[in-house]
Length: 426
Image 1: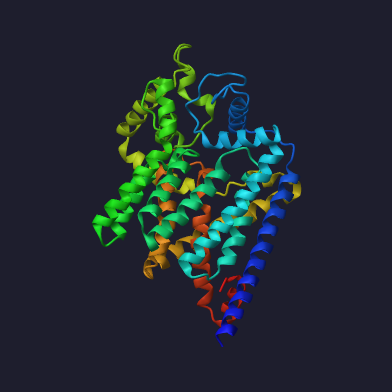
Image 2 (image 1 turned 135 degrees about the vertical axis):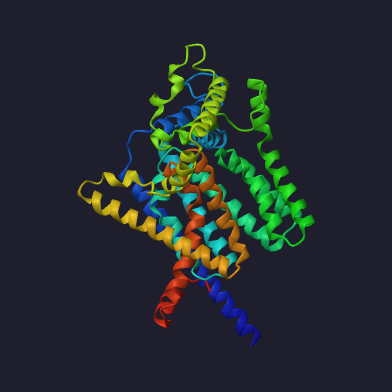
């Protein structure tokens, strides 16, 4: 009897691995197919920035955005340009190689989402989570762009999984790894610079032992600081200022406090620093101080209007999917656009339902997903809420949405529960 149970378990595991492999293969084929369709397009200005920095690193000029120049750059974080530089050094200046590796990162992110869903929800609907994350249009679209979103999404998903495990098992090593991952993620996108403090407060709320929460929370903050410290030291040596990660936050804050423009980005040419004198135009430290003072002035002039704007920017952050690139296909534009908007809003609705059910049922392991979505929404509501900035938290939202969808469907009877079993890893 015992042997029969073991054999059944082995067969079940083998079948699960086969399904996993098949779904990941589908994800890669779809991603590579899309990359082939849009090959040859021009780079965006942000893409050109990353590309120039990476080429300068490969050529020995250091972290500079000006082609063939060694003027140090302070308005970008280092991890994604270094990722590109590693590819360029190995494969030559190949945009195709970047797209291939980023598509593998999308598949890896989907696999991490699958594992996270299994840990939290005991395996139910994990395969559906894997499929949705891997084929979600914004992730497919941005896998073809020379931008940091896909690498940042992968790192944030890995961080989320570690936080879930930390909540379940605890331990100094897990806390330290979680902090390191947060720091590394910050070196890809500075958004998570304050996230260790949120994790610290989160652990105090979640742990019964406040002493234990304090201990692990401080380890997370320390590990994150260790991860970013080499870059902080580099900034001090170059600019003689304490700059933890990068400059550029104050201009984003100024955009987000400009009530007359609804807190929306109006383009680089509309930024006030273009009116600076020639001597000050390249002084990023002066610009940072200028924009910070102007931001405070905007808030003081109309505090009520700013509070209303904050609420509007939360909506702006989630107002649309970031899939502009798929809308170029002629007569299919309306259908593709409409389908993506429908999927986007369905995920938001079911994500909210899933979050409510998580709180109602006290599924504590799912709380880190909600924490990260909440943190990103708040951070970009304070700055300016460009919709593409929500891409890194999409896997977490999708996990919650799948749970909300599965529980909603299950309420309609056994017929639908039989449908859900095909997407379960149990």
